[in-house]
Image 1 (cartoon, rainbow, N blue to C red):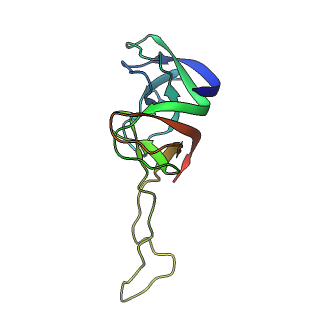
Image 2: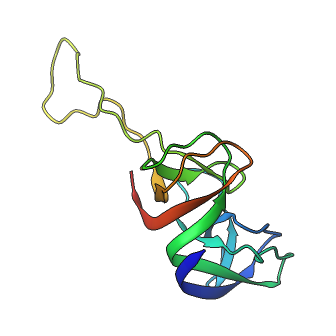
Image 3: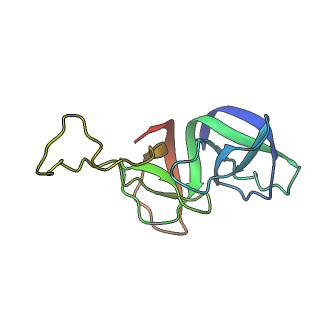
Length: 139
């Protein structure tokens, strides 16, 4: 593991080690990521398991080891599944406006922005612990 910045937070609910986290409901609190639209920003360390209201270290920059929830390939942008595990981002895809009465700038497939935690550095499958270069952003 090569974390370059680790910050301590309060676990709002129980969080396991190597799990993607999002902002909690109050400042200084974190929860396991639960959706690809969550504001995910870090990963609990390998010793990061915490019960509700316990302190937990979160890696927010560098290379983190993350538990994988589905197949990912080296270089894939990764996001969180419903359990804070890394899965490949589906990314936004554009749907062409094919309406008969075309309207410039019409919304054709509006969706919430998918957030990624970073990029896979190795190929991995569900259950693996994989290195991910942290680069939180929108897909």
